[in-house]
Image (cartoon, helix red, strand yellow):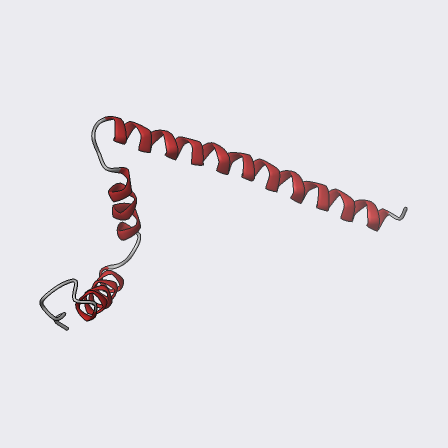
Length: 87
């Protein structure tokens, strides 16, 4: 086997090992997040709402307003809310 193949093999092994370590870290973090949600639930917080709050905090104000307007439009069209959306 040529030296180039050996180098490529070593690089490939390094990438695979890095990815495996990151996947394990990702699993650990996911478990930690699950534990925090469990703690929150244990103290009386609604975890579905917490997840929505976290998703909303990731969005900027403009994106949130746009989604709210579309949601209100759909709800109004379905007769689920009385007032038409303001825009």
